Image 1: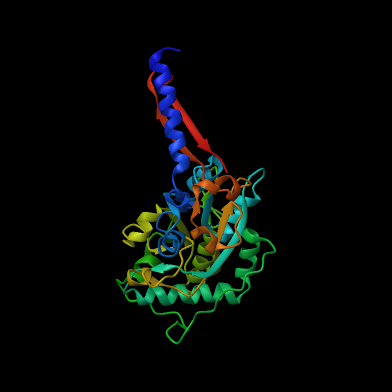
Image 2 (image 1 turned 60 degrees about the horizontal axis):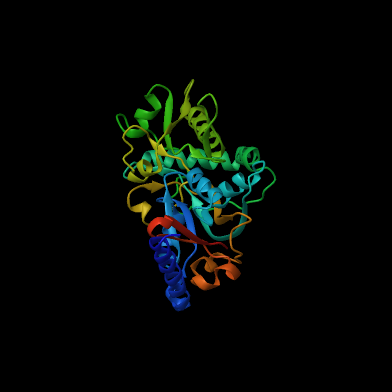
Length: 322
């Protein structure tokens, strides 16, 4: 070892000793959480988990991949979707907690009251006829979920007469289809099979609604079309090349400023997905915990990588593992 290497080694040793002298509180870190950007999980984390390090992903499966790779320690999302991934063979992930309550609605352009009334009527018939329970069983098996009845005095009790030239009239006359915008990367609600067909709970609900509309308005060969959109596109609520939004979208006050929502068609909770390497938590509040870096080995916090370069010694990496 030449003199340059000796000094390099001494520098690294001194630096590492200085780390030990840093107060533990100076190295407090939060949990790394993956979410799909723009979702209610993303909003919840931003508002309620200020100490967490939140990573947003374009799709939920990208967040899941990050979890499996160890880039995040938990993924937050809609509980049914997290359960779907948990149930996959050799998934290596499990639901570790659930929280909150939320209702999904179908988005309708602002000002289109006739269309809103028609969809609410069709959806109500799907629910009351027993078709809803059959559709639910296909996607969720024997799971029991009590659907919120959030209808009120403003909810339609009869089908509207479509005004000539209006939005509803255009849909009923337009090539025999009603087009739902959907982020088709979100099983078990909506995804594409090998042939590019939309499969899942929302796709089946769309077909059932189209069937009820066809029956009432006397339409032949009328069907639903699921048009793939990104989640960000759906949140823009432009309705430029689709009529409605059907994509496991939670009804929120903020979103209701940009779109109308139908009565609830699914009631859910939020969930937290982890791996065997994830820290132990008892609920969502634990995700806001700050723990000293010095306690990582005992507390199971995120690994901390330190990369140093010292002369001819090259790069030296120090990694603290949970």
